[in-house]
Length: 116
Image 1 (cartoon, helix red, strand yellow):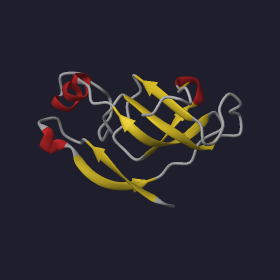
Image 2 (cartoon, rainbow, N blue to C red):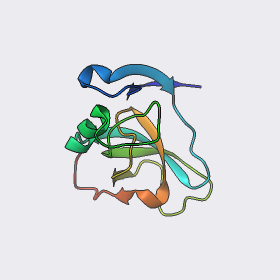
Image 3 (cartoon, rainbow, N blue to C red):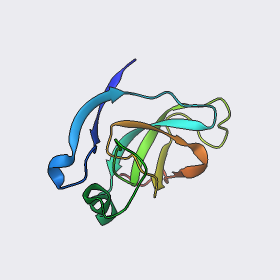
């Protein structure tokens, strides 16, 4: 399986808790798409998560709740999107990485004349 770089947080605290690691690039399930991130947002919410002010039930997590990317692969049941399409998402944890899978119901198309 191909690898990617991602920032993971395993302990709450300051920015030193963001650990750059190599992890597997996931494969999309039936209702998911695989996205290559082009741009991502950094929000105060991400800082609160890392500091432990917001409680989540994940030991190692990838922060970041919004991004724009290009669809690289689609799951068998995905019909609203196609490979090569630029999409965005918000409020879904896991953006601080190069690639990610996400349910196709949680993304939205980006107009062709907009650039990330």
